[in-house]
View 1 (cartoon, helix red, strand yellow):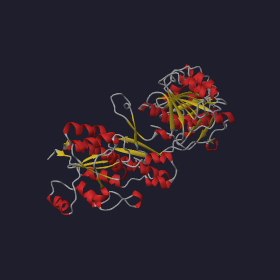
View 2 (cartoon, helix red, strand yellow):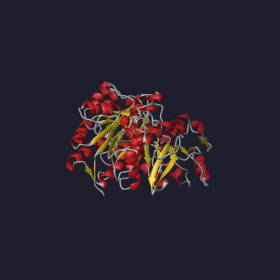
View 3 (cartoon, helix red, strand yellow):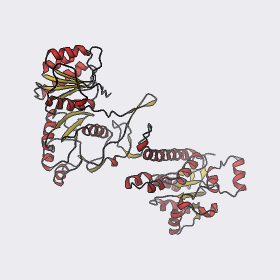
View 4 (cartoon, helix red, strand yellow):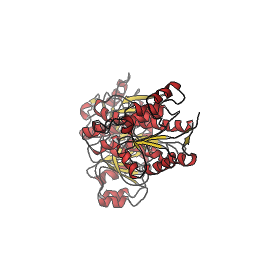
Length: 507
């Protein structure tokens, strides 16, 4: 039979908010309530009758509360299949009451991890009885309704009020699905805690459904962020963060963390449209904006140093979505908060994920994150002319940016400033031509600039175009069967070229 009426309920929750309405409604429907510990006291305090689980099991709560509900008298009543004669004969033989509704939530493990480093306290917040009750009730959804979190109380209350405690199989299956989502996410959070040092590859290593999005990449798509952004930054001001915002935030933080000097980066559609390192925040900002002030409109700004008032006044002159920094002076915040929708994020931690995942076809790709960033020592000169010290600094700078640019990618830089980039092209020559043309559009003199490529040059055509544009030093991974063509051209025209031996494709 699809429809089932609730006659008995087991309630054992950590959070009591909103429970009172449910309990009153159950009492009105004459549902017998079994409960534990603090939940029993809460119900008793409402003046509503309930029976202690300890009286049902004939065992007290033991081991400091670790064992309360783990008993056949409880789980037998939940798991008994009402249409199975053998099951019903056994529960009758042992005096086990059928339980039709289970309301349970879980110890706040994730919150405890955020609040303390005390491992003993964290371990005690690994729920055993609660997770078992959830799984048991969800497994027997044909006969039992499971409510696995307080966010489901409004739906339950509506069922109780409108249908007098009668539920359909479809409704019970829906809440069972929610329950398995709850248990899955909870176990993943625990795994993530233990896996911080172990580093076992796993797709769901960081899943914690805690960040619902307005929509996905486009308004007609649903979107959820599986993760905990509160660990990485504090939102100081502005509207909700969107799916696309998160993509740009990830790109911005991944890039800015590569720099040790005072640096500003402007991200648009996951690529840098502005980047510069200078002695002061204001200097770095002005140089970054000069790279491409058109694309910077509506972009995501990030800095690796706190933002002061003077810099904030300059930044406030353009429209942007988000600014991320390790700090803001009070006066800077006063300036930047003038626009109500502008998102201001204060960084709290660096991104520690060691793995990348991408869904495709009917599965998921896994890889280690690209942590390789080549210093000058790892750049091997292959031409007659060795780069000058200033050129080497620019080569390191450009190589960082090209690593974080969509392939095929070319980056042109000069004086630790991005001049232009060619990104996401199907041809490396096209990427270079795009970069050169863009640099000219914004008035950059490329004479004395450097070029970085995310992969090798299969022919000498790219270095020839770069030479004519004014490039004097090039960094690339090398590895083409025709590397010598590019080396010979550069040597013949006084261009310095270095190989890193590391390709940085980003598709």
